[in-house]
Image (tube, rainbow, N blue to C red; front, side, top):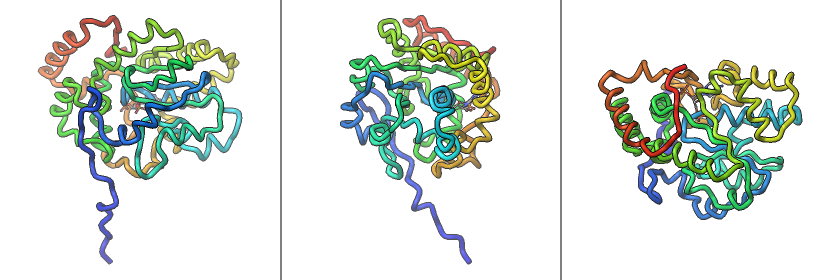
Length: 300
Ligand code: A3P
């Protein structure tokens, strides 16, 4: 018997276009009226990142801190992307991010976004909701984004590595410029005190310390024993082997090309950048980051 052709059932890769000055695809703008008018609550916790900076990692840490002991079913049968809705997402095969967030029964609601700070719905600021921003150094972020775009059919085709890197430097990736994203959120932190700015590199270096930092920001008195258990449960290997956190339950990712939980390292960029690419990247970086004080580590 011939194998049926399933390709017509897969959504095709979307085009990138300019949306309010930011490169986007329709998957993140189709539901814009509802995103813009989203009603945040004072106890909401917004997890904000540039794509591939450690969103899932921090989402899972927060989920365990708040709900790890509540409901065993949540941990064993609800994938992390349903526990922590992706606010601006509008994929046809699941409810929109705003619908999922509106229907969350838990308190606090954990909500994820990749929006640059200026596009975040204003109710989050009005309600003084807590925000956890996670940033990752540009080089590793660019590498992780490349493999993600290769394997996720809902992202524009990245081309080859060099092509992708050029687009990354030009800010022509979904969610726009990495440089503007990390520095825009860094600026926000200076005036909005309910924002914790975390670094992926710090999380890799000492996860337990960052879990403690999160607890103190969130006003949680999670006992040390419990924090230790959570730190173990969110280790890269544990999350890679956990169906609820490794995205293996989602059909649009092709793990034969690259797994979602890929390497989880600081400094993997060294296996991708040529000497010439690294020099060009450093030059561009200096220019683009000249007006911000945020500093990253590209190795530990
Ligand atoms: P790599 O592609 O470099 O491996 P996001 O969740 O924002 O999409 O980010 C995904 C990146 O975070 C991937 O990076 C993934 O492996 C990494 N990551 C997720 N969980 C992690 C963990 N527990 N420890 C280290 N890295 C983790």
